[in-house]
Length: 161
Image (cartoon, rainbow, N blue to C red; front, top):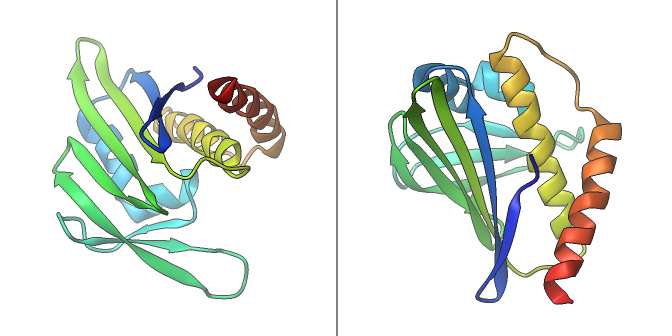
């Protein structure tokens, strides 16, 4: 399911909705436990899970380079919100009748050529997270990313149109 994208100030907010047939606990575990996180977003490393804590972004390019991102809001089993470049990323998990709802919101500013790459990356990572919770693991599907990159390029260009 493609993200809903809207202009917001000098940037955009993208909202990804994923209904999942799993418990809040299972989804939260996949979002916050490093042995699981590395299987769907290998750049992220959870360091200090609390408000004003840190998440490390590893470049994974052999350089050993990384940087810390501040956690803006943290509510156990419900909200993980952290800095992402000049914007932010927010995960919200809430119980539903047949499992739970996972929402990812990303605020991106400035909007530039990298924006559609970022959106395609989160889209594919959320698919990988869903697969992981379903008991399947795959390497990053670059062909799928390329498909979504085209879709998000069009969607972002439409906002300027």
